[in-house]
Image 1 (cartoon, rainbow, N blue to C red):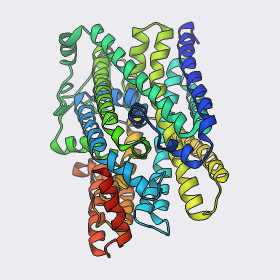
Image 2 (spheres, helix red, strand yellow; image 1 turned 60 degrees about the vertical axis):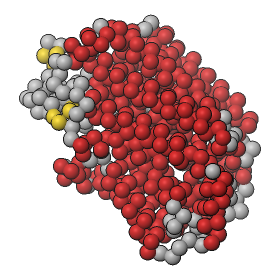
Image 3 (cartoon, rainbow, N blue to C red; image 1 turned 90 degrees about the vertical axis):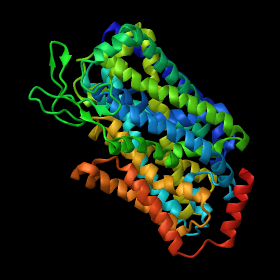
Image 4 (tube, one colour; image 1 turned 180 degrees about the horizontal axis):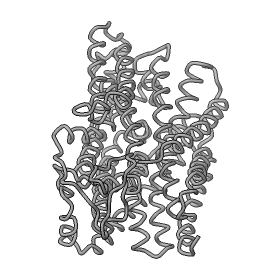
Length: 530
């Protein structure tokens, strides 16, 4: 290892020690009861709620996955994905947040998303809670794996050797589990606040230095103008190999580079269907437990307006800065990275080229911040689904608080191990792994959240049908239907979300109306929200 890499690691190590110290500090406050451990006793202020929601949502995907897409194929996919995510963030905070905060308390003080679903529909058999817990375990394991892939890629890059990948995946997972295990929801929310600030700070810093190094806007336009359709938001650049074949994500071939210049084909049009497919990422927000829990945990509904403004501003700056970094990276280092997987390290290369090693270590910690702020949320939500919704809700309803907390910790350990295994099996693209998990959660929960909050005619049977349809269709579409290509090659979240919503409406209308008690609670929650 070089002295430069050692200095970089020292900067990153200092950051990690601070995060673990915060976890230990909040351990004294977060272990008294499940509501404290899983929801922080609904005590989040506007800054913590907003920043922790966005930081836990974006993950290492923001600093590696999204810039990597922009670097590899230009504006098309990256730009419209960012637009969809920004729109989804705004609508979620503007429409869902207040109603969910009040309704989750009205619904017998639900402290997890599966518990809210069962309480909302007076589901005495806990069918909804069980289904929701299973969806969370499946897709959060995939989501957590994506963050561990980020750890592996990051440290493999720092050490300059791929053989360190496995060790770094395990080490990164262990560190995140340590402070989450100790401090629970408060620890991860407070660390997410710090990590959210760090993420936006390093994105802007790298963007400014990159913009200067490529000669400003005119220099950027001149350099990228050599790559067909690269800056066209209605087109997509097509990297090609030495034989002229297109290079895509997961492909075994690599983009050809001749005398430092990467080879591209003529590019392709980005159709309306492609654009809608990318913008469908925004639909996922309505079903993201890590975001919805922050809505439930805000101190009062009066704080939500300020949280919304903070969150939307952060989201806009971070998303479009990440896309710009990918474009500037291609202009600055045009032939350096030749596969979609390698392209996801462009932020790392730029940080180390622009800054002294110690400062680069602190800047690269922004990637650690992004991955840690997400993986800690996923671990905590998955553990709460097992401990609070399966064990206490179904297996042992008289379980005491001590047992619930220990089941949660054991589950967290098992989710971590499963995430590590998935990360070691599939490490090609962070962007693609995240997209799968995002679709599963978005389609499984998103439509039901909206109908639960805003349509009182929704029935328990309709809720079950919608949840099963959304979650199952994501898997079916991803593994089978998308292989048909053409119109079936769209992002699986879009058809799964629409079919889930349709299933909720049809089954609800075909089944008996909700009871008077369910309607009364719905009206009470609506009155409290006005």
